[in-house]
Length: 315
Ligand SMILES: NC(=O)C1=CN([C@@H]2O[C@H](COP(=O)(O)OP(=O)(O)OC[C@H]3O[C@@H](n4cnc5c(N)ncnc54)[C@H](O)[C@@H]3O)[C@@H](O)[C@H]2O)C=CC1
Ligand SMILES: CC(=O)C(=O)O
Image 1 (cartoon, rainbow, N blue to C red):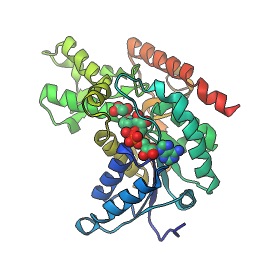
Image 2: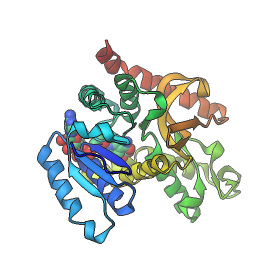
Image 3: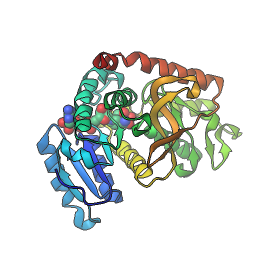
Image 4: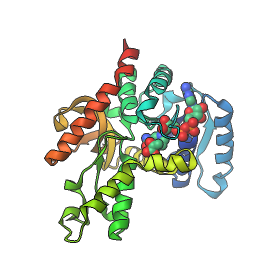
């Protein structure tokens, strides 16, 4: 185990498409001081560490190495991107049996190191595996954060921006619920620079529905074409990393434990929340339309049903 010098340390567990893209984006955005890569395939992690280190003269100094679970003791963040990804036509929920078992082993190994930081989970089904990590780790819920609908919300803002020909950074709109097939668009709180999207006189609801369907099905469309998605989520994970390590108090749609918000409890799902150095500072409990409320509750019930394999592992 390398001793921590100073500054922030992030551990990435699973240096496949998502983990290595996240590592590359972290290096380019100069976010952390130490980056440790871990994978079941040790050579892959070593190769990635070498390759990333060779970019250092073009960026700014940081320490990158292929490590072990012992390195988690001094870590501020452990980001889990390990496990199976979807094949063409497979849903995220189809991955639960395989990935829940993988997670039990990983989270136990991280906790055995003495880790006392924050987990970020990206592996699918992300909401259920975030819940599993919270249970397996015994950490407070604010320190176990799933990437949730951070990517779906980015896709939504991008497509709304294209439709209205406006910079997507000026589009405020959320996708909530499962990061998956039962997610929902929150049109009642979507605005462009403060002007509600639904107040535009020239909008065509059919086209707005198509925007949402393209968001919901984006992963299927990309997986059909290139086998996996990774750049978008990698940038979303960096955004979340910055919000935490720089104590930004930023509003991001992440997966977190609901404890009464939206009339739901004992489920992790995507909601807007304020993120800072403590992790989840506060969930924004928005007033949804009746239709949105019902869809969110449907999404929660599908997730709860699909959580059974995790409960079996906790027995
Ligand atoms: N939350 C989100 O928005 C997104 C989530 N994902 C999910 O991220 C996950 C990873 O996807 P990819 O990187 O494309 O997969 P990948 O197959 O390229 O990488 C997975 C890596 O995990 C490693 N691994 C497996 N078991 C391990 C263990 N026990 N310990 C350490 N490493 C282990 C593998 O060796 C492999 O390198 C998938 O579940 C995928 O569905 C992907 C894109 C977006
Ligand atoms: C794979 C996945 O979860 C996504 O791209 O949304």
